[in-house]
Each structure stands twice: as structure tokens, then as C-alpha cells.
Amino acid sequence: MKKFSVFIFVVVVMVVLFFPSMGATFPCDSNDDCNDGDGSTVGSCNLGSGVCVFDFSCVDDACCDDGVFCNGEERCHISGSCLPGTPPVCDDGIQCTDDACDEDAGACQHIVPDMDGDLHFDINCKD
Image 1: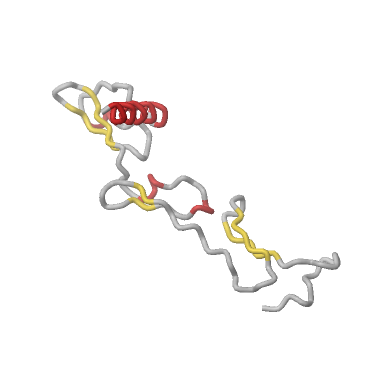
Image 2: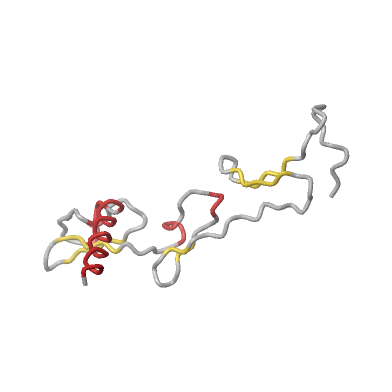
């Protein structure tokens, strides 16, 4: 039972750190009052208590996007949870190119080596 209590404590701490608006209360008269500006939450007004209730489930793929190209495009599962993306395959099939994901460019890069420094690719590089 002690391990379960520690687990619950850790979960609560993580929720407070990563979802600070969960700890806040927002008074409301209608669902329109419960837009917290966070695309990953859906707010609704509990008319009985007059307080907004937030559901941290995803509603579409956009709310799961972490903005990182190289780890793939995250998806919203029908259950409302975000699924991790599949990183892009950057291998172009040419053995002598250096293939890598370039986060700044948001694309795969295929660098052909210039072994002799003449600003032209190595003549021995063949696909």
C-alpha cells in the first residue's frame, strides 16, 4: 500500500508541474467561460458548482503536436490520448551520403562528402 501512496503522490506532483491550470479554479456561467487558451484541454462549465472542469484529452492531432520534426508526427487516438510519432526515415539508400534529420530545416539532409575540398562531391560516390 505504501508504494501505491508514493505513486499517487508522484502523479499529483507531475500533474501540478506540467498542467498548472488543473490546480486553478475558473468561475463560470457557461461553457464559453471555460476556454483556457490551451489547445490540449477541453473546458466545460459545471453549472452546479459554477466552476470550469477541464479534460486534458486530445481532441485532434494538432493538440498532440510537440513541434519537433525529427521525432515524427504525433497523433490523437480515438481514446483521447496522444500517441508518439514515428521518426522520419532519412536513409536515401545511397551508401556514401551522410543522412540525418535536421530539426532546424524540418527535413532530412543527405550530405555528399567532399573528400578533396574542391566544393564538388566525391567522384567515387555512386548510388
